[in-house]
Amino acid sequence: MKKVIQLAFASMIVLAACTKTDMTPAPQQPAETAPAARPSFTAKALKNEAVNNYCVSKGTNTTRGYIGKVSMETINNASGNNGGYGNFTGMSATLVKADGYTIGLTPGFVQGAAYFEYWTVYIDYNQDGIFEPNEIVAKGHAAIRINKSFTIPATAKNGATRMRIQMQEGAQQTDPCAVYTYGEVEDYTVNIVTSL
Ligand SMILES: [Ca+2]
Ligand SMILES: [Ca+2]
Image (tube, rainbow, N blue to C red; front, side, top):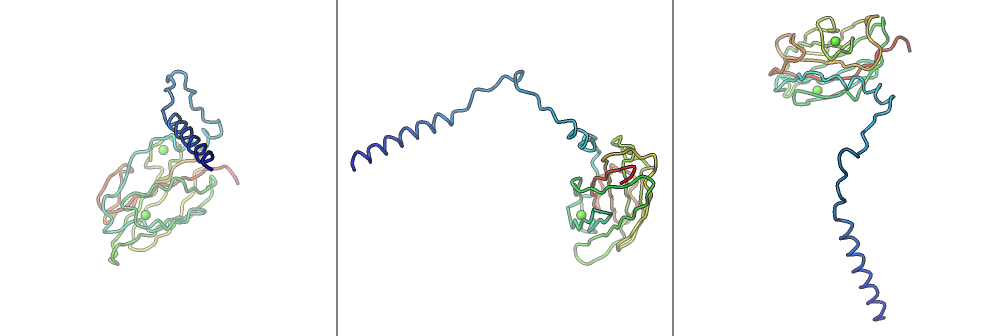
């Protein structure tokens, strides 16, 4: 019995020694020899939308309303209060060129008080990373949900691109890169195709 205990104790020491050795940091590989990360061709194509470094736009105060819900095809997002900005680019809808779609825009309010909310919706159709005036797909204002219809231009570029939704209290926002006080911005992904 005593020998067994001694053996067990000896193994514990060996184990402890090994653990200690394992914990010493491995020597750093020189940066030159580290293999470069190579995204696969498919991954690169799918990430096309993410490559564009879109400007920041957000509200800084949601006490006069936030984007409560966005509905369009497979996007049906009761986002609630995101504090002025919600990044939902992980959500996407596939839209066919020359086809018509409707987007539902619902404001949310903090304490029951309703305000007039002005909406501006962009889709970066040419995928250049800039929201241009001719890429505004919906505009409108109300204190309740509005539904706006639009048609995807035949000239839109195929692939994943960004949809930006701005909601501002009291006035139409005309700068897609604006940081403003009352309201919220949400970004989504849309996938433009020639046909399904
Ligand atoms: Ca929201
Ligand atoms: Ca553009």
